[in-house]
Length: 361
Image (tube, rainbow, N blue to C red; front, top):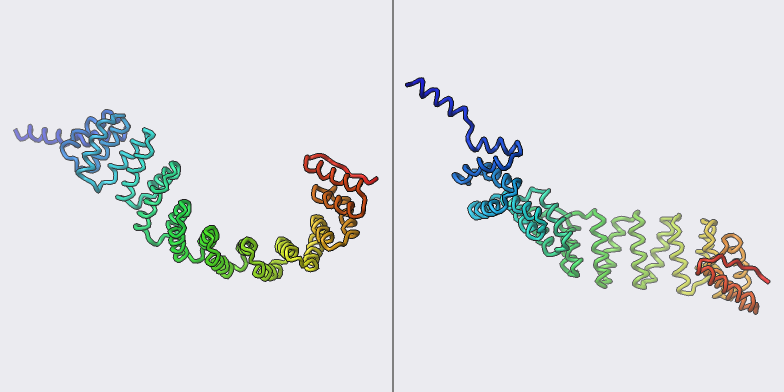
């Protein structure tokens, strides 16, 4: 009798349980058979997390969707803190191309398990694709609550509010970004550009100027401040800044060009010519500056010099619409109406893409 019971006991130990069989068939990717064995254990004890998770996955992979939905909803009610349940449902709705419902469940996963960076990225991608700005804002707020020291999160939600046209909220989040990452140039640029776009000139100027103090060697920052001064017609500040930049960046022609434009606008032609001469000295291969000189020479009545400079420009480059139009004006001043008309015709031909060669009578 003892021997008989010993054999039964050994047999029971050797025969795998339904849970183990379910695991075996899941690993073997025989999900139909796996779901059969896993379901027995699932209905006996749904709190067995590993078994329940395997069961839901087996139902999903075997395409038994109605059973999957019933089992998932039951588990969601009984065990609301389990993140694997909404994850299975998210995968299901994603497979059905229902991105909106899938995003709801992915959001639930992130709420329950904030360390899932892969899910966070997937959810953000889904909301981006569907242009669901409100959903993205919810996700970023949730992530900020979980990780309030992350500068990138404040940058992201600030950008979203900016896209919605909510300038004050965007600025508030950008300021938090700047506070957490004061060396991040992007934060300075975003704040300055935001206030600039909102028409808040005072705040925009403050952030542009503070940015230049933080990054005195960054030429892009200097360019932004120059452009801001020109845009807001702050010509005195522009002239002062350009003078500094010409000394700091002597090889950057755009600052000489900006100063020349500024002087022409103020009709300070001698200063403008001085800038153009410096450009011609430093960049003799760029004949555009000769045309700029011609504009000033015409404005100041130096017609003969204008004609000579245009002849040199045309000899070296073949000319363009603008230079031939100027030549027409110069020849008209000297009473050469026939030559003037020819020059204008060449200018028109240049616009149309023709050669428009010009020959004097």
